[in-house]
Length: 266
Ligand SMILES: [Fe+2]
Ligand SMILES: [Fe+2]
Image 1: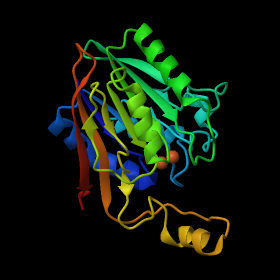
Image 2: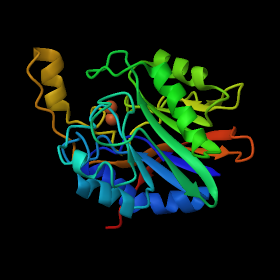
Image 3: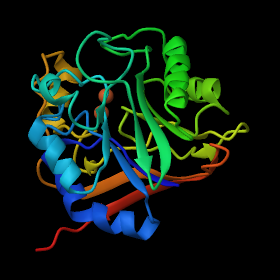
């Protein structure tokens, strides 16, 4: 099973990048399923509206994962139970939405889960270890032969630790949230594919991880309450990873980075 995962889709630019570039990547890589992190897909870079979710799915994404911005768009709670959207299982436990889904991919069941890290996060979730154990058990009980975790966290150490905790029990642990793609993709000794961060999709080059320089400068230089604005014009980029999963063993054969510029037709 070839799993294509797209890192944090940021703002309208991120959705545009997918609209113009995702089809070709899916075809070239032979993706059987496409998962994207959509926690920043709203036009202001915070959260996911119903329209953003529809846009992303129309571009070819099958399942959307989330992160700390999960509750930023109020309407998320209205469609979270209806659409193929997965939100961190360990934050807002009693709120709407689900922490995992099990979906059929060409006759093989794939479990997709989302967990948020605890170090340096503004919303600190529940125990990641107990949550991970419960998610593995729940997905296996529903027949998942392959399991994918989006671990949404700030600290590189917490991401690696989480992947090692699940090594041999999950097919892949992919880090999100920091928006900068790391060069450490590997298959761990137990067979779990891992990368610290898949990177972001949208305008990266002309922004500070998606936001305009000015607002971020004012926050760091003057402590001024942030008036962040998503960058709307610049180079469109898609970042993510492709994982080749062995359906018989549930282990990963390989993980490869995707990092490319999308040229929209003029
Ligand atoms: Fe993000
Ligand atoms: Fe995030």
